[in-house]
Image 1 (cartoon, rainbow, N blue to C red):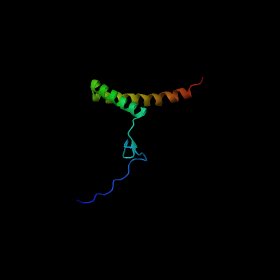
Image 2: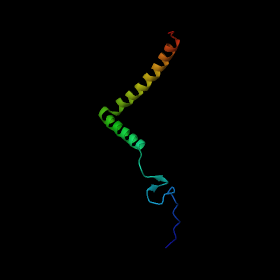
Image 3: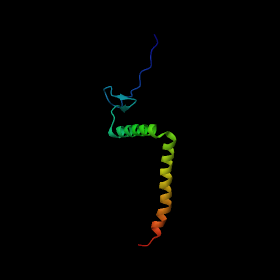
Image 4: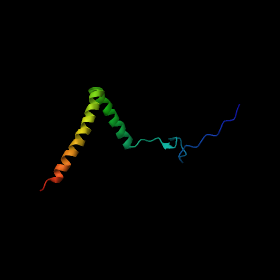
Length: 80
């Protein structure tokens, strides 16, 4: 039939078939950590509910910001 175009080499220099699109197929500990945290967040979200989780997350960051804005000037102005 018709001739096909040659396949692009995406092996990343490896001679065996353990690569796809130039990246090795192995998973390191950072990938496993991210996957684990995502699974924990998903389970927590199913238990807690999306709206409550979003409000809790926003409240944490708002409290951290307000605490920094209020306490940093207060602590730096005090004399020891």
